[in-house]
Image (cartoon, rainbow, N blue to C red; front, side, top):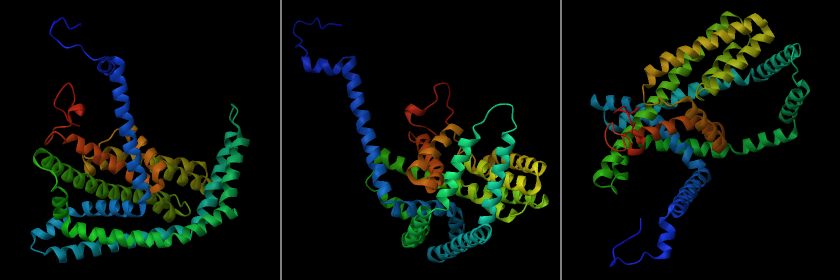
Length: 372
C-alpha cells in the first residue's frame, strides 16, 4: 500500500530492498547462516577439547544420578565432606566392579564369541542362498572378507598400538572425571549458584529451572538406564543359560553394555546372541533367543522405562535415532551414549523456558495446555 501522506518522507530505495519479500528472505538466510556457523564453531571447540568435555559430562551424569543419595545423607546430619567421600567411594567401587566383570567376561571369550558370530553369519548367508529371489551373496561376502582382513591386518594392529599409546589420555580423563565428580557432589548447588550470578531477573529464574531440569533428567537417565540394562542382561542371560548357549556370561555382559545405546544396542545384542545360538544349538534355539530378546525389550519399553525414567526422557523414536546418528558421527561410541540424555536435557529446558511447566513460545501446543 503506497504512502499517500503528502508530508511523509520518501522511503529510501535501499530500505525498500530489505523490507520487501525477497529482502526478508535474505535477512532470515543471513541469520540462519550465522546460527549455523556459531553451532559449527561450538561443536568444533567441544571436539577439540574432548579430553575435558567428556570427563566433565560423565561426572555431571554421575553426580546427577547420586544427587538424591547425597541429599538423603545431608538430611540425616552427615556433613558434606563425609557424605561426598562415602558416595564417591561407592561410585568408584561400583564402576570398578562393573569394569572388572566386563573385562574378565569378554576378554577371555572374545575370540570364540567372534568366531561363533561369524559362523552364524555364514549360516544365514547359506540359508539366504536357498530363497527364491536373488541376493548378491558375492558382494556381501566381499564386505565380510574386507572387514575380516582389516581386523587381522597390520593396519588394525598399528591402530591398536596407537590405542595403547592413548592410555595416558584415558588415565588423564579418568582422573579429571573423578576430581570433577568430587567437587560436583560436594559443592554442586554452590557451583551452579556461582554460574548463575551474571543473570538477573527472569533470566536468573530461567537458569535455575534449567539447572534443576538438567540434574533431574540426567539423574533419571543414568539410574533408569543402568537398571534397565541390568534387567536386560539378567533376563536374556537366564534364557541363554537355560538353552545352554555357549558363552552366555559374555553375551549377558554384552547385552548390559549395549543397553546404554538406545534402540540400536538392544537390536545388536539380540542379533549377536541369536547368531551364537544358531551355530551352537541350531535354528530352533536361535528363534527362541530372538523371542526372549523381543519379550525382554517389550517389557523394557512398555513397563520399565516409563516407570523408572518417567516423562523426563520421553522422546520420539525418530528424535532418538537422529540424535544417535549425530552423536556417533561426532564422537563415536561415546557420542552415541551421550546423545540421547543431552537431547532430553535440551528438550526439558525448552519445556520450562517460559516458566514452571510453560514451554518456550514456539514449542507450546496450539490446541491445549499439554506440555509433553
